[in-house]
Length: 176
Ligand SMILES: [Zn+2]
Image (cartoon, rainbow, N blue to C red; front, side, top):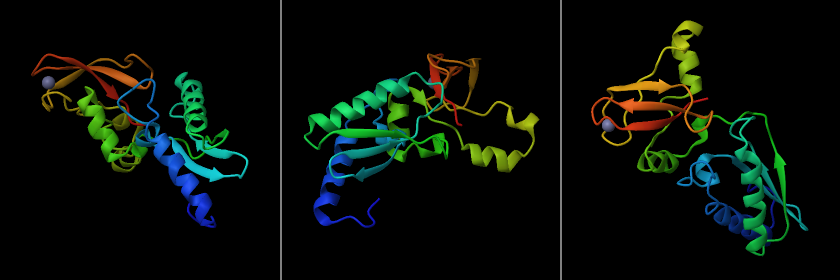
């Protein structure tokens, strides 16, 4: 991102990134699009700012909402018209959620993805084990005594769990 930019332009790009830090994910309003890791690149095209976004899940209806919010935020900050480019490869993975993003997820009452897809694929190597339930610690009391109630929560991106220690249900952001 920083390569081959003239100083004036990199300041514009840096300002765009700080604006994007304020754009919250509509599904998980605790997380910005940067913490979610979906903003891949900001490119100064002169007349426009090109924002490269990788949607979280191809079928996630939130993508259009996020795209619109990003455009509006950039334009409202006077950084010029924003042009969004959706980049679907490489696909977004929950590994891209920043450490700060994971902390905020927990505060919001959502268990962040446990492990990564890459880890799961490498460490178990069999399809049978891969679908084995993972331990999802409760975001409220950190107990590992939790059970899955439903494979789908409020969105397809999340599963519904219940903590057996504090008895609170919570959502789990599934790793992909
Ligand atoms: Zn609990």
